[in-house]
Image 1 (cartoon, one colour):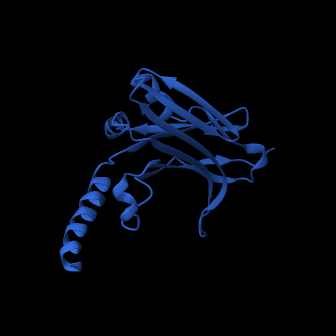
Image 2: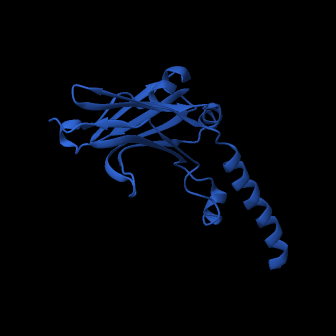
Image 3: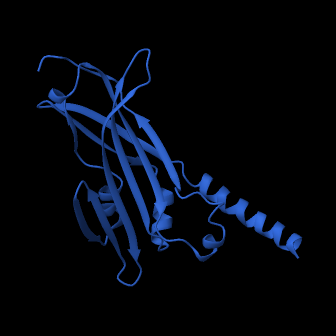
Amino acid sequence: MIKKLFFPLLIVCSILTHAIAVAAPLEVAGPEVEIRENNIIVNCGIDNVKEFEKTIKSGVAKEIIFNIELIRSWRFWPDEFVVSKKITRVVKFDNLREQYNVSALYENSLTEKNFKDYNLMKERIFTTGVVNLANIKELDPGVYYVRVVVESKSTEEPPVVGLLIHFIPEVDMRVVEESASFIVRGDK
């Protein structure tokens, strides 16, 4: 009895994990780093989002998390984490109303908006907008760079996933990109 169930279960697990691994050729656009009025301003997003369009239009809610980190680079020592900002976007397609429901969480601010057009909604959820990461007057002199980590996961699990939860990763996609290094001088 167990042998009869083992092979079909193994096949289902391998198909699901392969589909998740293959369906994420995304890349981070940016990060664009600019120092404006002593503030480190970061703007980034993700490209190649065709797979997301199909998934979202099928009714699966997606959560996209942008972690923007400021890292101090050291020569003979591991790099030092300084500060980070987290931006979370959740999108779900409402089939009855034929609209996209988008929630955005940044710091302590939650905004919700509905979109009829996918292209307008796409700019809202796949980009961070302008993020004020840190003030350079509060940083020690040194060489810094910005790391962006983008993760995506489905907020709803299909019924089969409850049985196979240990075989399927929680995060659908994870992409990391780093900016060019920049120097913060000590003149405050």
